[in-house]
Image (cartoon, rainbow, N blue to C red; front, side, top):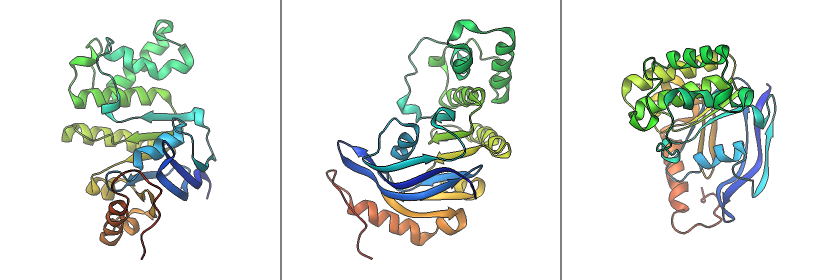
Amino acid sequence: MTYALAFENLTLGYDRHPAVHQLDSEVAEGSLTAVVGPNGAGKSTLLKGVTGVLRPLAGHVRFGTCTRSDIAYLPQQSDIDRSFPITVVDLVAVGLWSEIGGFFGLRAAHRARVEEAISAVGLTGFERRPISSLSGGQFQRALFARLLLQDAQLVLLDEPFTAIDARTMVDLLGVVRRWHGEGRTVIAVLHDAEAVRTHFPETLMLARDLVAHGPTANVLTAANQFRARQMCEACAGPPHDCGRPAS
């Protein structure tokens, strides 16, 4: 099986305090993978390590069928400044930055692609709205439209369905299935266990250390979830270099 990503003894953290500890695993090319675990398990940290925002304290992130330049990354909404005075069409057009280098090089073909992406996420008619006026669900739709234009082989989503309405979640899950059907590798940090069971064939469970990685039915068990909580509770308190609790 060809891998898109391989984690080799990967340790990531802040101020030299590990948040992901000695992770060894592979993400298969074209897989649709949920990353789950308790709060503080290192899920968002792992995505930052893949993008290169965080450099490893130890170990490596290896790229198989793609490169770091071929990543589309959606951070949590709370990490995005929505006060910037741009419109929906401007935000979505950022997805073409590698081709046009800015907002002012949009040719007719580019504009058509931007409009197509906006339509694909159900935001037709919102093109000239400032992003500060959008609801949480509308803003997330716009961010997904931007990802569509990036046309990346590896898509990283950090809590993409948090604080949005049910209809928006259904529509955006449709976009995720489209990416998966096109053979792209999609990795999403999620908290909704039912959504993971229903829509994500593969799951990687973290509790700073790896708990399990494989088919979702095998990973998302009560025993693994209990173990993950135990492992994170053992690491509660001030940051420190913790290992697995005794079994």
